[in-house]
Image 1 (cartoon, rainbow, N blue to C red):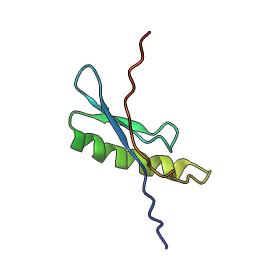
Image 2 (cartoon, rainbow, N blue to C red):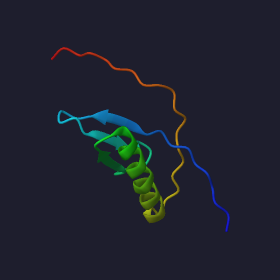
Image 3 (tube, one colour):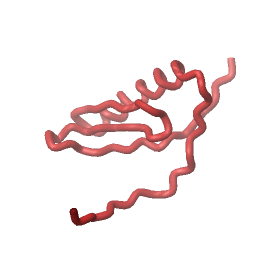
Image 4 (cartoon, rainbow, N blue to C red):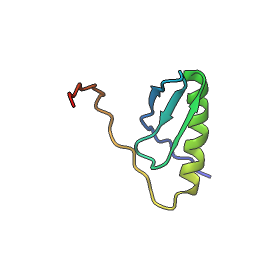
Length: 74
């Protein structure tokens, strides 16, 4: 059985309660959380595997370019 290796970008943010939220923009609905970055990364790996096994469409990761924050006055 041949295994394909894919590289995905994982975004990690911290919510107002200090919990780390991890999500994979290339995989719709693939997100999780943890008390530490390490825990969030372990859990997102598991979530990615579940999402990829359940999805019937081929998911091709996009090339990561960068992240920027932008301040907007409202």
